[in-house]
Length: 303
Image (tube, rainbow, N blue to C red):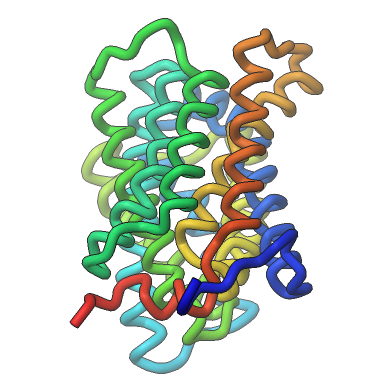
């Protein structure tokens, strides 16, 4: 096909490493889901977001201080999407079920290629769109209940899915132009700076109790520094649609962690959903357009 190249079985070593990095990031995101849910019993959601991102920002700023207007401008715009996604998701998780939260958040898998196509004024790649839809069906089977009612928590989580999709697109556009650690530091710093005053307005001054500090350190360092760095680096190699579908493995990892830690088991519906998510990932990484072409087109309008 003219102008299109594919990655049969990911023959590029760099592409394979980027996919592996995203899989590890998805595992960390999924494994900490239970940790966050438990912590919210002892701390308001916005205050939790503020404290966890303060921890991550301080660590990354100590490692690499960002310099230059462009990195702060791009990192700030990306950080706004990150802030919106986490505040909406964490707030929604307090007042909606875990199944509804996971399912509705998973809509970012579908929204990412759709929004990317909207920004570049071109329809998304048919393989990406098909894989995104398969992944969403898998998420529904894995985490869905018998029905969905759009409560206030569900609507907040739907907003979270939109913000996470925009964040993935923004990373694909700007992350390749900046060093990974300083660029990530800007995003975490902006998220913390936005969350602190918002938390003071919504929650008032909140000092975490000893029972919450473990969760804050795990998410602030393990997720905010470790997994997020992996995601940012991987998106300097892969496009936004690829990243979105690979990150859709997060619910599967969450269920696997609950199996090991809590002794929970998947039913047949859950196994089918997990298989569909794996199938979606396979479709994207074997039938995706060349990453460099997708990065160039991610937010560039057609002329």
